[in-house]
Amino acid sequence: MNKKTTMKGMTALMGLFSFAMIASVVSAAEGDAATTAYHWDAAKLGAGIALGLAGVGTGISQGQIGAAAVGMIAEDGSKFVTGLIFTALPETIVLFGFLALFLL
Image (cartoon, rainbow, N blue to C red; front, side, top):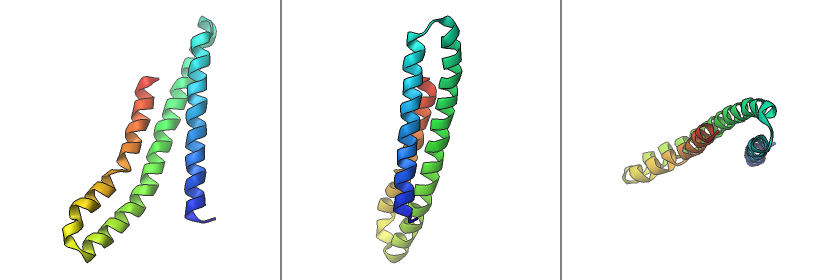
């Protein structure tokens, strides 16, 4: 398995978990008081999974981008700002995980 296939699989897995999390919240809003408490626990679990997978995905991409940015800066020191921007971009994925955590 190459890295592109692995990343596509991780992206699909995160999308599937996000869909399941949203579906559980929608079904919890339609239920009665007894089932709402059960679905609220599932929503907390889904939010935790979303944040954890967002962190894992960010860590995987941050390592590869950071290595490439260091190589780019080693060749041409004037590209420091570009390398810094590319290194900071994957960190926004974790912000989406935090958003899901606080919305649920």
